[in-house]
Image 1 (cartoon, helix red, strand yellow):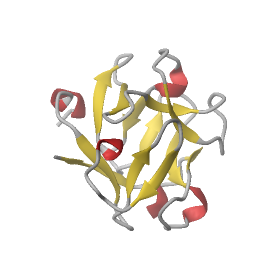
Image 2 (cartoon, rainbow, N blue to C red):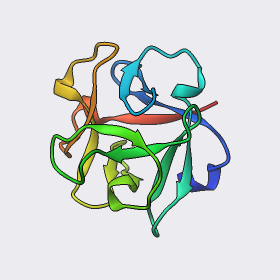
Image 3 (cartoon, one colour):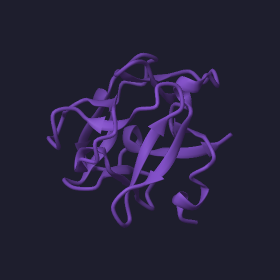
Length: 136
């Protein structure tokens, strides 16, 4: 199913291995234990054909590769401006990948502790890059 067909629903983005979810504060993006607070709820908005923005319910900002599409840059939330560093698609292997650059959302260093950063890293498909959308 095309995830954009459910864009009016909110979901959590849960790492398949750890069970931790993406959590946004003002700009920072971390992994945390699930609480159900708005900072952990996301929805999809259509972007360019085949891609989407991932918007946080708590702060109204979208996932953004800070400083542009570069391997190892932090993923943050930022005001939507339409840049390609804010556009994503979901692969069949459950990686969430930048519209350009083949960079996946990645738990930094593969360290599954609450509060760890999320980065954009070359897609390798290991467990620290595998997430599923769990609709609420």
